[in-house]
Amino acid sequence: MSAAVLELRGLRKTYRLGSHVVPALQGVDLLLQPGELLALTGPSGSGKSTLLNIAGLVDRPDAGEVLLRGRTVTGIGETEATLLRRDAIGFVFQSFNLVPVMTVADNVDYPLFLSGVPPAQRRERVAQMLAAVGLAEHANHRPDALSGGQRQRVAIARALVKRPSLVIADEPTASLDSHTADQVLDLMREIGHAQGAAFLVATHDVRLLRRCDRVIALLDGRIVNPHTENVHELAMA
Ligand SMILES: Nc1ncnc2c1ncn2[C@@H]1O[C@H](COP(=O)(O)OP(=O)(O)O)[C@@H](O)[C@H]1O
Ligand SMILES: [Mg+2]
Image 1 (tube, rainbow, N blue to C red):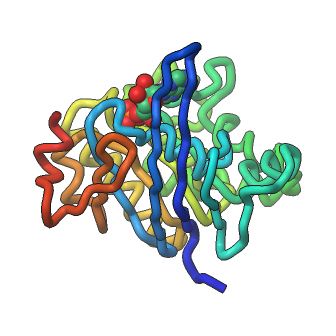
Image 2: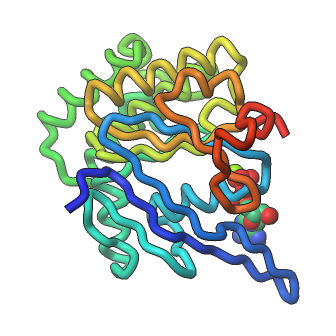
């Protein structure tokens, strides 16, 4: 059995809009190890979000296999996929996706509530997580009282509070200024390494790439060899 958190084998995905055919992924292989922060870069339309949606069990490939901690999950049913998403995968989005009517603490607590964690344990883990992202004093505020960087830190706390083995982040810093983006990425790496969570981060922000453990680049739905292509130029395309 593979020790990898995530393994993708020969992923293919084609979108069809009437007679228009878009080959979004054309045979992608990828291995993600525990605690690793892997950046997925490449120009807009290269297939990053498609890959993340398939890796996060939000969408299904036309061909190929997805393995989570060595287990094939390509053929599982929708109910099981929902449970896996809930318990084993954290998500961070460009637009934060916090619940505006809930406090910061309640936003972070929500995944634990859904997973049926006992209340005392929930309170302790939410407090720990808010301290880890430096937002303890904002626990009772609403997200709209916070800056963009603070909101993304809440989203990171929410993604990590259930201690997932995999965190999927699609352009997590695209709405942030560069200094805040650096801080948010460093925070993901620190907490991820401490918890042993692996991060798969799509970004075309070239400045973030050197803060990641490893970088792979997509172009037209294929991974390009970083030795033959300049990933930094690709990221800016
Ligand atoms: N739901 C969809 N329906 C049709 N085409 C799509 C859909 N999602 C993505 N695509 C197309 O698939 C390709 C890859 O898109 P995407 O995975 O969003 O790339 P990226 O995240 O790198 O910008 C693009 O050509 C895009 O237009
Ligand atoms: Mg995208």
